[in-house]
Picture: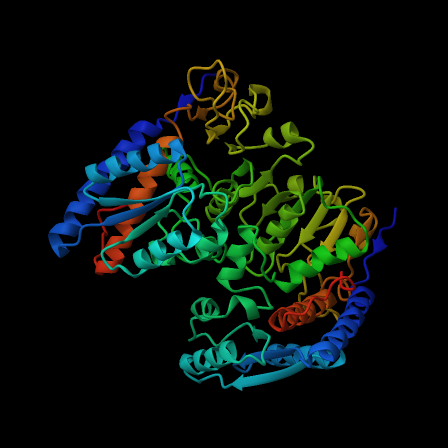
Length: 293
Length: 293
C-alpha cells in the first residue's frame, strides 16, 4: 500500500479562494473590510517571517492587515497598551499576538486580556474554555486546520480512534478537544507515555504534534491509518524541515498522510484568515451563509 | 483478587477536618470568615438537598454559607443581578450556581459572568480554559476529588494509562485534563465509541463518568486496575443509587475501587470547601502553607 498524500497547499489555496470570495461579498454588502492586527514583540526572525507571510496572504484574500512591532526590551506594558487599544478599536476584527513573546513578559496573563471576539488565533484561555464547554469560539488555527483537512478529503472522524502525540496548549490539547467534539474516541500521548508504539498502533487517525523529528516510524502505525504530521523540525544536514513522522516508512503503511512541508502547515494560515473573516462578518451583523462552508 | 475499597467518606472527613483547622487559622490571623454563596434557582428537589448538605458541611468547617433562592419562573435577569452583586461583594469568596438552572435561562452565558476568583465550583469557561492552558484555576469539584482520592491512597498516576468513560463539561472533560496534567496517558471514550470494552481493558486507571447504570462490567476491566466510579444512578427497584460500574464483578478484577455510595461522591463537597477556603485565603493575602496539603 502507498498512502495518498493530503495536499495542504492545494486545500489551503482552495479555502483562501473561498475566503476571498466571501470577503468581497461582505465588503460589497456592508463596506466593512476585515482587518487583522498582529503584535510582533521581540526579534525572533521566524516570527517576523510568519507575520509577513500572514500579511501577504491576508492581502490576497481582501483582508487588511497591520503589524505592530515592539522591541525585545520594551516593557510588558507596551504590549498591554497596544492590546487594549486593539481590543477597543471597532475597525480591528482579529488580533494576533505572535508567539513567542520576549521572555520577560507574562504571556499567559497578556493572552488573558485578549478579547474573545477578536481571538482569531484561538489561544486565549477564554477561547480554550469555551471549546471545552462546547460553546462557540475561535479555535487554535493549526488543530482547526488539521480537522478541516480531514473533512475536505471526506475522511470520517466520528467513531474513529484518534491518537494525538503531544499535549501543547496551542496544538495537542485543542486538537484532542476538537477530535472529541467530532465524536472520535481520543487518546493523548506525550513524553511520559511509556508504551508509545503500542498506543499509536491503535490509531485510525494518528496526529503527531510533538516537535521531535521522525519520532513516529512506519512500524508504529496501524495499516490503513490516516496520519497527520504537524511537526516542523529543523535538523542539521537536512535541506528541508523534517516532520514528527518518518515519512518514507509511514507512506508504506498509512492510507493517507500529510507531507512535510505542504501538509498541515499551509492549513494554519487559511484558518486564521477564515476566523478573521468570520469575526468581521459577526461584528458587521452580516451572515456568510449559505455560501461559506 | 478482591479490590481494596477507596473510602471516600473517610477521606472526605479527613480533608474536611484539615479544612476546619486551616479555616480557624485564617480567621484567627485575619478575622476573615470564608463565605460561600449559592444561587439556587428553580425548584429541583435534588438541588435543594445538595445546597442544604453543602451549607451543613460548610458550617462544620467554619465556613459561612448563604443561599439565594430564585423561583423557577423568575426572569434570567434576577440570576444575573444576584451574580453581579456576589461578584462585587468582597465578603463573598466562593460562588456556587447550582446546576441545573431553569430551562429558560442561558446557563453557559450566566456561567461566563462568574468571576474566576470566586468560581470555586470550577465550571466557568474561563476556569476550564485556564485548566487547558496549565494556569492556576479552581477545578471542577468531582474530578478534582477523584484525583485527590488517588493521591490520598498513594496510587500513582504519572505514566499510567487512564481511560475516562464520559465527556461531560463538569466531569469527563476536566477529569481527562487533570489526569493529563498528572502525566497520565489519557483516553476519552463516550457513547460514540464502538469498541468500548477493548479500550477500557487497557486502563490502569478506569474512570466511569457517564451516567449509565452498571455499564462497566468486570470483564471490561484489566486485572489489577484502579476503578473510580462517579456514577450515581437511580434505578427502579433498587434501594441504593447504582454506579456506572457493576460493583460485584468489578471487585473481583480491580486492585482498588470506589463504592457507590461512599466513594467519589463525598469527595466533591470536600473539594468545594477547600476551594472556598483557598479563595478566602487569597483574598485576604494569607498563606495557608505549610500545613495545608
